[in-house]
Amino acid sequence: MSRLTETAHPATPDRSRRHRWKRPLTLLFFLALIVLLTMFASRIEWAEVLQTLADFKARTLLIASGLTLLSFLVYASFDLIGRTYIRQDLTWKQILPVGLISYAFNLNLSAWVGGIAMRYRLYSRLGVSKGNIAKILGLSLATNWFGYMTIAGIVFSSGLVNLPPGWKLSSDALQGVGALLLLASAGYLAACRFSRRREWSVRGVEINLPSLRMAVLQLLLGAFNWSLMAAVIFTLLPGKLDYPLVLGVLLISAIAGVVTHIPAGLGVLEAVFVALLQHEASRGSLVAGLLAYRAVYFLLPLLITVVMYLVVEAKAKALRIERKAS
Image (tube, rainbow, N blue to C red; front, side):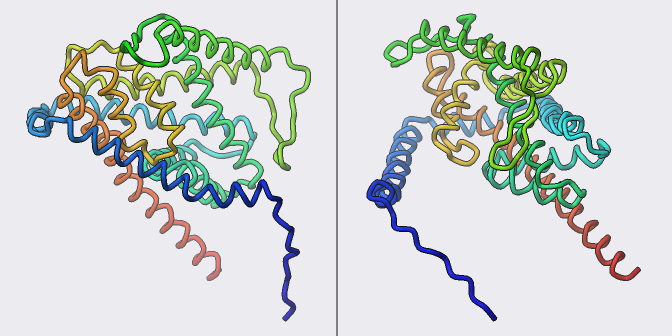
């Protein structure tokens, strides 16, 4: 047998220096995060949290679960747009389970596991090429984040979210951020409508600019899903909070979650909500509502989609055995 040998490329001083410092800096970041979360947890009245959780009514949890189901279906429909985008003959019964499973794994185990690896595995079983899987993934990401830009732009620029005094980013600056986000969304729509060049190639993957109609649908569905996520949290938080405020805080916490790269944004979501809303409601009631949100929106769908995934794998295995036998 022949052995493949790799040609060693001498590392540049800058690259080796970055590699040497990357691991200790990452470790230092997570240690600092643990300290901050510990300090955050020490300031919470956990007796109030447990009491609030015990007082949740079944009707409230059912409403939150219904909104969660609707949100997951909306997110899974991003891939239905992808079917039109790649022009492949797949039924909605084939696509929706992939979207639901991927979203649940994405939320709980990071985008690499759910959004990317799970989609590649499931779509490859449906005969979709790697290039088209990449297109579906790209379109789904664009739908999610351009939808975010649209709804965040509206909420931030309208002044519905007032940041506490002492924050480095003032409420006026947040309105400016909202205006920039709306401009970015409008720029995307303008490009889809007026751009003469419709195709690009990025690392061997062909990217096609969607039609204006598809782009509008992307923005609407993406914004709708973020609105539904906020509606789930709003249902579980104290009743005196206004929905636009809850939506705005969720949108701010989403950026914090992306920056920290922590799976499911553990602790980040809670810290942002408590920091921004502790003058509106008690810390214990806020944490209780967010813990219930994690159970309803993260853990319960994960348990359901794990069963769905096992069923899909079992069907695929049975199909392979049947093909070998025939």
